[in-house]
Image 1 (tube, helix red, strand yellow):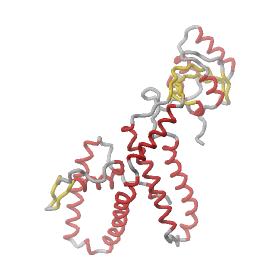
Image 2 (image 1 turned 60 degrees about the vertical axis):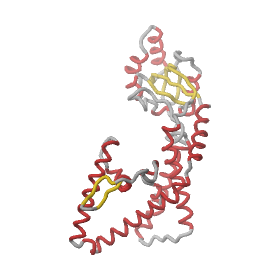
Image 3 (image 1 turned 45 degrees about the vertical axis):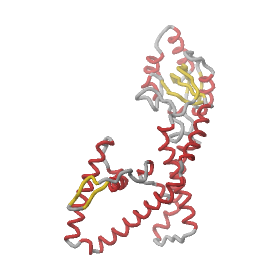
Image 4 (image 1 turned 30 degrees about the horizontal axis):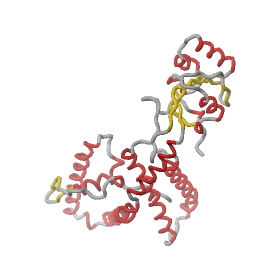
Length: 314
């Protein structure tokens, strides 16, 4: 049901270290860089919020404790128990799955393919005009006219937005950050993109109320540098390759749900998993985390107050 779309964490990096040196020895067992890499993949979601340079010693200490307990488990006969054998079968399946991914699937995503996707998405952004604007949202036309009059007398737009605006952007002085025309409701976008930089609009009506808009900046889209988004693109393409591979494997296999209770929810769960997969893919198709980065509002204002003005994702 799509769980295989979770790919190993180090899939964005080289599959094997250049030098597989020994970093620690536990009662004769050598812990190498490759083992640290694999362990990091295995517990990445459980790691505390540590900077990258501190994760390495943390994972090495984790491995030392693991091997100490494993060695004592062997001494005390745990390796002969049914509990151990069941766990071994589970972990063996995971190990084989991960090895299959690195040896068979990962090589399918080439540098040429990543670059081609980047160039395609970057070209789309370069053709898209984006603007940054502030607005003040009020309930009536008369309120909007009153605010416009105060602006014309020299009062600051940001101060009036914080005092009178009805939406979340008031906390940022009405700043909505950068956006493209399709991102906002049509009436708002039409009025905003018709302004010159520094110009303030007349009262504009939308389904949300009356707006006074000031255009702060306009620019053509620009992609982030390739090296900064290469790993993100690879990750999206890898998810796609894993999905394609699983479709072929499942089609050639016999999978039967025998638990009656599970059958009741299998279809619903399958739909939910499919929706999740589609959402993940949109990061590439919409030029999000994949190829083309976008300028954001100032620090602390990344989401600004676009709120209800934004059209829902199609």
